[in-house]
Image (cartoon, rainbow, N blue to C red; front, top):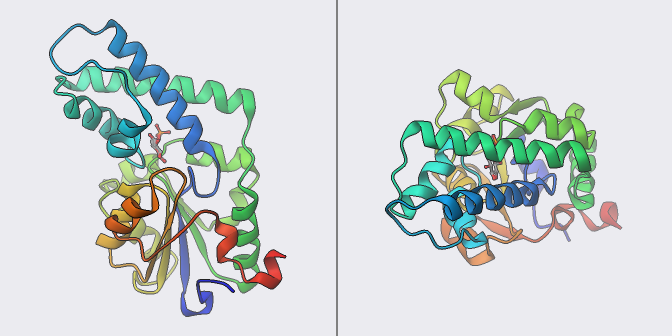
Length: 239
Ligand SMILES: O=P(O)(O)OC[C@H]1O[C@@H](O)[C@H](O)[C@@H](O)[C@@H]1O
């Protein structure tokens, strides 16, 4: 039994990293490598304890790159001047791209099942990602032709749209697809992204638990939480 009646909706808006592709893990590893190298050599004010996955989920996950850097440093009481924020964010981006080029990307099989199902239904789809690397990740995964619009971190910056947890990037995608917020589904694995979906009053906000925790996603405003997008495909299709 599927948990979503897809014919009730006019558009579906996917976060990318951790929802369509397992690249949230690549981002996580790159952030950990960069922040721990920084904390080891840093001897100024603030809490210099090692950076952990808990820091990622609370401060960095789903947010635009430099906002993640700023929010993490601030959470530790470490001063965050813009030049340091940019330097650390760029270092993390280099680490991310090394892994992307070396290992490539294979989408989650359950996510591909859902994409196939939604294509059969003819629903227009968007990717709404804080990442400037979203187009490259989609290309690497062979899924670039599945989405009518990709609202990446770069697009948001160019249009002056505030990033998640603000709902503006999702609202922009829905409008582009000719749908209202109430008529659109948001799929998100990050607390910041689920907050954006709830804040924008989208018709359905699906939390995808890849480590943030079902409880935290529900608290942030997820209507339902799944562990894999295959759960959203009618059983006949997923079999
Ligand atoms: O640094 P990028 O590739 O522009 O990505 C920004 C953010 O994009 C989000 O999709 C990821 O969840 C974050 O981990 C990442 O930091």
